[in-house]
Image (cartoon, rainbow, N blue to C red; front, side, top):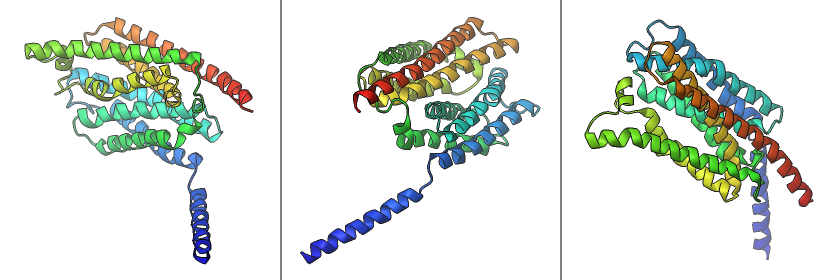
Length: 302
């Protein structure tokens, strides 16, 4: 009996120590700025260097250099401000900003993976690496520590928002078919896809990331939404933010390439712009509906 009492006291003491340590851990108001403010500074530095340094992309062919400069402009004027704004809103306890912040980091992970692996080594290579690392760890932090604070975390019952899952399944399937339509004929004919020859790269980084990671991730998230799974509702605003930013980027790069004399179908930019508007509309509808659904859920379980 004595030993059991002593054991219980020891366990209680260890639990108190653990709780004390957990309480001392920095909360999201500290961790998010620690991750995002250096990231924003690095992104701005990389963008300015690429845009203003004469001949910065001289080792790339004309098409890839133009796309890289266009990406720098998007990062500087859209992505960096969005990242900073979401950090400020999160510090003000705005939960809607959390998945938008995560989606922005997911976008930066995608973008700087391309910078790291598909640009020639240059003076700011380490900055590319820091941007990739900070954005990836920020997204992982969302999945591990912040998902429960997402507006859709407690939403496990059926809602009209599941139709966003259909959108995810459709666009991921269409883009998968689009990339396969570019790759398979080249494999059969033992040639290089025209889109790849234009960039002068060994492989198309967009196709690599999309086919192996991004499109399957979006497709599976769509399935989770259709089944009414909580994790699907957590991922929905993140992926809508990512898709919106990616569509805007492709649209800008298309128009920018045409302006710089690269032969490209401008209608692609128009279609992507329309998709960006549609994705943004879905994101707004998501937040409006998720609020009403959470209020109804709260009243039903009081």
